[in-house]
Each structure stands twice: as C-alpha cells, then as structure tokens.
Image 1 (tube, rainbow, N blue to C red):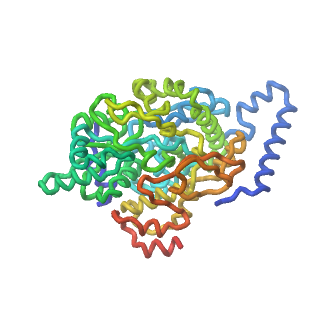
Image 2 (cartoon, helix red, strand yellow):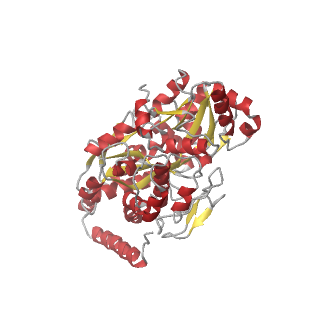
Image 3 (cartoon, one colour):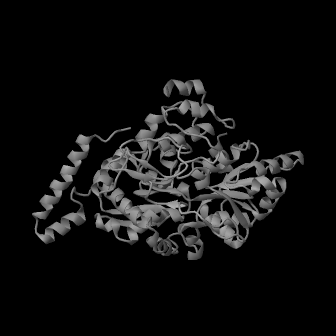
Length: 477
C-alpha cells in the first residue's frame, strides 16, 4: 500500500535562457502597443485596457483557496482591484481541503487555485489521483509553515535531551529518543499529521524526522488532516503534533496547547511553498486570460510584500470569508515575528512570509525537481521518469516571464539554481536585471544541485524508494 493510500485510510474527518533578441522583441511589442493605445480616444482606450489589449478569452472566473495566510496573493488581487485592473471578474471560493481544490480544478469547477507546490506535479503524474496535466506559471510565496507538538510531547522531548531542545533550529534528535523509549516500552507509534500526501508539509516533516534517523513510515503514524482542523485534533489528543501553514501553528501556541518546534523557513530558507495552478487544457484554451491572472497576482504579491501594507493584508485575509481567524493570531507571523510558545517573547523572523521579494513568484524548475526527488524518496512515484523534463513541463517559467515583462518586474533568465549554498543575502545576476535574493540553507547543511540529481537521490539514508536507482540513472544522466 502506498503512503498516500495509508494516509487516506487513516484520515481524520474533523534553462531556458531569455535571449537578448526575445527580450528586445517583447519590449518593442509592449512599447508599440502602448503607442497605438495612445492614438485611441480616451473612452475607447480605457475600455480596451479594461478588456486586456490582447483580448481576453474569458473574464468571469472562480479561483479556489484554502484558509491559510498564504492565500493572500489571490485575496489581495481580488480585494484591491488587481484582477479588475487586468479585465478579470474573479470570485473566490474557500475550500475545505486540498483534495477539494485538486478535484474541482481537475473537473473545471474552479478555473484555477491556490495549490501546494507539489500538487501540479502530482496531478500531472497521477500521484494519488487520476492523471490530469496541470501547470503553474506563478509561485505564490516562500516559507509559511511550522511543526508544532503538544505540550506533553514537548516536555517529554526536553526530558529526553535538554541540550538538543535548547538549540535552534531544533532537530528531531530528542523526538528520536522519545520514540526509542516508547518502542522499548512496547507502546504504539505516536500519531502526527500533515495536510495532504503531496504537500510541502508532508515532505518537510519527513525531511526533519529523517535527518535524525526517524523513519516516518515505520516509527510514527503520519495521517492527513485539513489545515483548519489541526488545532482541534491536537486539543482532542487525536495527534501529538503536526506540520501546517499559518495561522494554525500560532493558534495552538496562543491557546497554550502546543509549541512550535521549528518553522519551515528554518528547515530550508526560502523554499517555494504554494503556487497558482491551472489545468494544462485550461491554459491552452485561455492563454490571454491566464496571462492576465498572473499579471494581477504579481502586482498583488508585490503590494502585499511591503511592510507598510502587511497589517492591511492581515485585516483582509482574517475575514470570515477567507482565513476566519483572529487578527491577533494572523498577524503573529505576517508582521515579521514568530512566537514558538505562549510564554516566550516573539522572535524576529522577517522572512517567515515572503510574497514577492527574492524572486518569490518565479516557478523555479529546480525546486519542482526537488519535490519530485521527495516523491521518489517516499515511494509516491513508482516508475522511472526524466526529472528535469517533467519539472520543466509543469513549472512554466516561460509563462511567468511573459507576464512579468509586461508589468515591469525583473525575472530570472535561468530556470534553476542550487540550494543550500547561501547563508545570507546574495544577488541573482542571471536575470533581466539583478535580483536581491535571500539565504537558501537547509538546517542539516545538505546541498541540492539540480544538475546532480542522482547523487542527491543516492544520499538518502532514510527512504522508502520504489524505483531502482539504476533505472532512474538511465533517464537522468
């Protein structure tokens, strides 16, 4: 039985390069289009801009979200008029689970949606569902998650290894000692939760546990619970911990029922977290509409990322129709700080939520490749595949560049980058203009090079890989 099937059974219901020729040709088209618009009468000119100068194939759209703080780009684009600016009339549909998002986008009930970074990959490959080619041309954010445990488990971890628990980022070393003690005493495995089998959260909690020698498929019970139900399940003692996005870590902290052990920013600095996903056939049918949506989302994300706008973002997304959480809880992570426990002072963490800076909206093919390595690592992909080719077909950097160019936003001219090599800010020069970037370290010191995928796959000491490495090597030289 696969990991995703186990999760369902246990579910609780509560390079490419942008050439100089292409760049100047596209720029000339923009300038020429603007000049032509200037020749039109004012009334006709405004109507033409509202409809989209290239002609939108569809203007009435429905986009899905999950009640998490990183739904902000879609919500802000609607509430602040960015969709309307680009000729789109968007209705936002708050969904109860990631499975709802996947299924409704698949059948066309939603035109597009807030998706976990792994969802377009899984949908295209048929991991956990019927294959449905799905793509993304826009990444919604970086970071935003945390791993929270119950107060009881936290105390057990402190008792098992007080020195390890004083360190930050906090490893799973103390948890390993608690698990070993339970095994020796004949106790059943503890139950942890994540939000979806192909979620960033699943791979993050697995990565964290595996780094300490914990096998998440053997040493614990790992189940699926929708994000808004995490706190209730922790409070009911159905689980001892979880990995989820905000505000559901800080909600447990504020209630005094849990402590956040580590954030995903600390596990891997500035990892791509959510994306805006659409069916491939939808993108093919409505290319101008898709581009208009990406343009609106880029502008909304840039606005939302400004510190002076963050409290307004909090006020907007905290509403019942979106995240439906107290503003004081939502703002705990959205305004540059993070609180690990109720009795601790907030810790400065300005990059916990990144919506635009550091090329946050660029759908890096290299990060898609990393997600594919994790699907292979944990046995979710059972057949060999060309990782780079697959990543490039799903994470569409060309679509992002076309939209970013039209709204005057700098974009990378490469499709991939190494991870785990920068401990502080750096500058991406391989871009339409230099882009300031943030650190990209993994907490365990590991490096990921998208040009050395087989070496990375061979390095996993804890895994449940179903595809022979030799078969993978033939397709990934």
